[in-house]
Image (cartoon, rainbow over all chains, first blue to last red; front, side, top):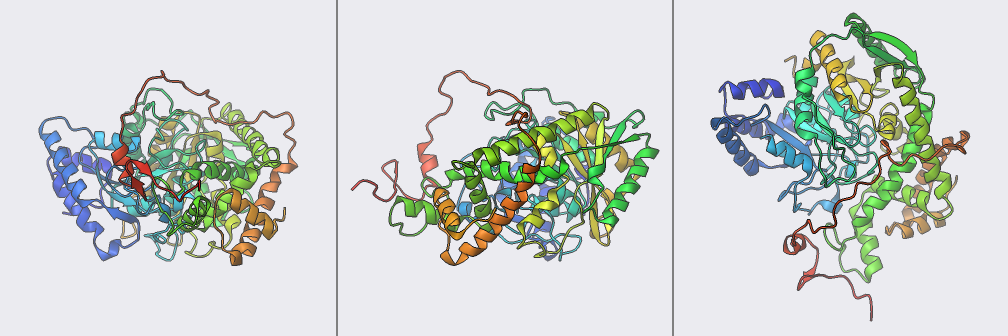
Length: 486
Length: 95
């Protein structure tokens, strides 16, 4: 049974039509994960026993006439989401021994929809990275070209979906961590509006930026997944109490009357010309679909990465103070005293990039520097947000590249943090503003995929998914696979 | 902004991170490069701009002051590095 090339929607139809049971589908998926060709290092933990139990439960639910569209479909959760009774490492030595005592809200939601979690995906340590090279468990390979990075931080999720190991994955996006790996791996990934999905049980990196979202092959699949993921949860004080639209039922429709803004700052210096050419071709497709275009300016774009690298480290230095070797996680051997316990547990438990960001954040928040760094960055954050508000007064959507280049080589940017940070230059401002954004496949540079980004106004995930779906009805980039078209 | 090795040591202390002495120059170089990079913000005048702490400018939601969590001490302590009689153990603080 070759089901691993099918999308979530196709598998849903197959399950509903009795073509296979969730048990059969899950067994096939688990078997596929063990094949040598699947050795992308995309999955850190395989949860075979729990998966088969969940598959049986899904089959019983279907027999009882209680199945939803996702019931019985496999997925992997990024290892940042707490999963009860299963190691939740966050890609870090610090949590290598951490068996979560509870489930994240996203994990509960997907389980309630009947989805079958087959494992936990690799990621940059504590979601800090754009290449999946900062993981304690080693880098993930890009299935299109194993010399290339998959992007990050949700690199394992992106590679698992692109490599056809699973039809769907969860991800989180603090500065581009869903969209950039989706782009570099040639899949579709949606970062919802800040507050749309609960952050409960999602290990915190930068709390005013973190947001969970779906990663799959198509916009249609992302719509189905977001419907299950989103929703109010009182346990996250920033989760928004607002009805979740039926995204999957609102995908149809043409784009006539839709105005799309092209920010000149997203097409300037630093953009690889071949990526630019792929985006230009996508613009032509959208024109044929009836959309009209307008040139716009997001004038403070160049300040987004600098503001982010104050705000995100500041929040991370505060959030990661809980990892102290006392209640859970890594503890050093034979501490001399309490300070030695803290310092060595943290020094041994955290990798280089995490330590770097904790130190930047600690410095930015320390006495005498707060105004110059943190306050300044929050002021710049408002300027960036206001640029978007102004743009959305004139246009319905904003379009541009997701990342300035296709996937780079493993090791290429590892020793130069600032050049790594610039990989997120088109995605970071969206997090600072709290807006939704989606990346979808739009071509290739050689063998390596190119991602197209669409940005929407607050809570306009439906419009984003509709525009992405329309494009996927007239193009086949999302059907290309590293093993051939499907 | 150029950080000295002694600055890195002080920051690492504040962050409670044990840092290898022989890696101080590398940390000083990397942290300085990041701080130079974020310096770009100082080119804009933000004197009249209100800081934005939350993208949707929401205020904190409050909940009724009621017990909402059950006691799960045993479960939580089952993953702790060192516990005894329901207490978390750390090196002696008071002699």
